[in-house]
Length: 320
Image (tube, rainbow, N blue to C red; front, side, top):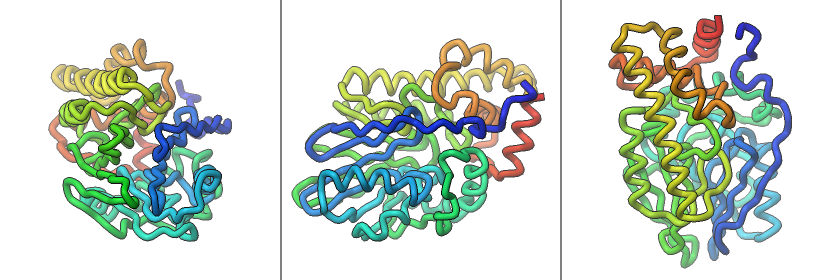
């Protein structure tokens, strides 16, 4: 295990892009387990949900949108604060961008830990942060909300809502009420590991229950393929609930037995590897996941800030 490369530094192969139509208004831009981007095309403008890692990467999304419409891309919505999702927002500034929207909780997290997170994630994901020099700095929301807000793209109603804590405390979904289509951000994953380094693991299952109660017909997860039927949506929710619950239960068992972090990692692997070992970014996520789960099970309610230095210290301690 000593030779295992840090996080996703060995992941250098370009991924196959998929552009899936969910309705006449909604599209999913996905890429084999890379962070997904959502697109909503209304009567008078376009909304982007999650902005990719760099403005250069955002050009791929823009090219797909421009195959369909010349309408201005008025809004970018950030489902949470992670750099790999938000630092591409400046790529839309020449496309008619009016507002970058996020929850107030997400804004507060950017203020508190955005720079450390940016430095940390650039080190974790060299492929996604190619052309990182194109990033002008942190992405700051220009409009925030608490709880819920509604936007109209002409006659198309778009809801932006917080359902509770999960992947972060600022998690936000975007949905089309008339079409039962949801963009969940990393609250839900499909065929990919859940990154829980900044999560509230005790809260996450209940947040998923609230999402399940909304009975969406289609859902675009944070990573993995678009879930195109109600059965697949339910399966995606169940998969995510199983991942985070198994992780947290394992950490709670380990803490109760007095295990240190490395022993907790071994105990968690016994429960997690058989079910999740083959999914996208599992080996990348698990050390961060177990560290946060061990913290939360041990009584550390709020996630500690990851820095590039802390990342490396944790990784090497767990790989010895």
